[in-house]
Image 1 (spheres, one colour):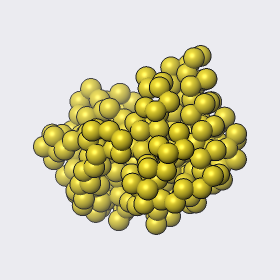
Image 2 (cartoon, one colour; image 1 turned 90 degrees about the vertical axis):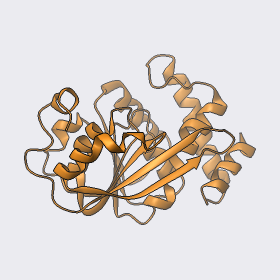
Image 3 (cartoon, one colour; image 1 turned 135 degrees about the vertical axis):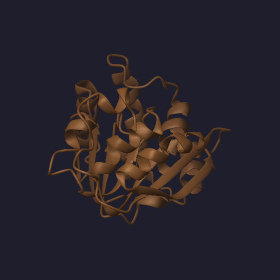
Length: 232
């Protein structure tokens, strides 16, 4: 996978290092092994892991590298948070995940790769978004979840400081129209749309950057399950 990783890193504007190669190789091996016991990902072929998980995460690096803190919401098997750490994002990072087994895997990866300034939080976004130690605390929030954009915005914007950015990782910009009311209610606006094709593939990615222009009203996020049942 050395050639593949070199191409991915080059595409993302990052330098190849043997240590990075070893860490990504170990990460992929552990993901495949743990996935035999727990449902961590539907992507199990090694090449697909590098392209659909690692490359998909690393195309965010330029957009987050200068941020003072990052929270990865609905982190799952660690994407994009862990790949960003591996390549050198050295600021405070929190991986928020509601599934206990996935959180256990995340902690295993963090310890196995000896990653620094990164921790997990086992909680749903609706609950964690009201925690004073997490709310309004991060310069950048990311989410690769499959939830509709208006739902994702309610889950994620409470964690972002005023002036910070939420990055919604999507395949296209088609959900922007349904998110207009959520943007207004939650005090965010689109500040960038970054459309890319993942290297070694024809897969389109659309990372939508929302800037937080005012504080999230206290009533958001609404109670557990409500954002999904009654989206803004």
